[in-house]
Length: 102
Image (cartoon, rainbow, N blue to C red):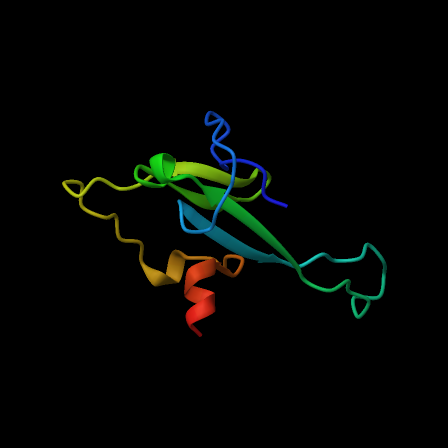
C-alpha cells in the first residue's frame, strides 16, 4: 500500500489518485535454483510522487538501488541522445494512467 510520496525528502502522505503521479513497475522474481523453469510470478510495484514533487522530479530504475528520484529535464536543456546499439534492455515500466488507457 502506498503511504507517502516516493521522494525520500518529502513527507506528503498519499490520499487520492487525482493528485500527483502514480508509477507502476513489473518486476520478475527469479527463484534461486538450478532449474530456470521455476519462476515465481511477476510482482507489480507502485510508487507515487505528490503534485509538488512530480512537477520537478520523475522516477527511474537503477540496478542495485531500485527506484530513485531524478530531476526532470529542463525545457531549456536538450535531451541527450544515445545510439540504439549501446542501449540495454530495461525492466518494463509505464505510468499507471497509461496502462489504464490500454
